Length: 69
Image 1 (cartoon, rainbow, N blue to C red):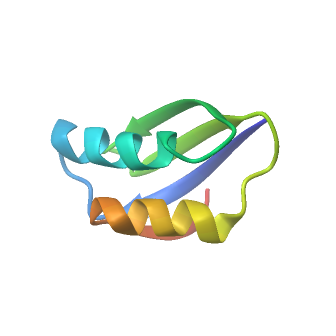
Image 2 (tube, helix red, strand yellow):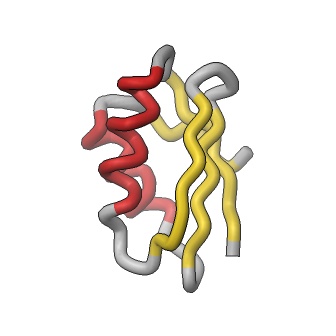
Image 3 (cartoon, rainbow, N blue to C red):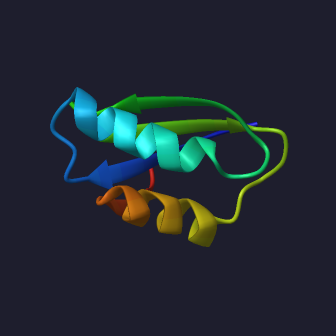
């Protein structure tokens, strides 16, 4: 399954890497696409992820999860 979220505060490749690293550590994540230009985070996973867990991972990276895109 694939879910997209809006993330605020990203502006470069380093931002994309930081978010990707934290979110990819969540159990069940099979793939991630992060685009700083659009602020879009797309997560592929085996099963639905709790939004709170995704929010915590994005927060740990130093950015803010705005919500589903």
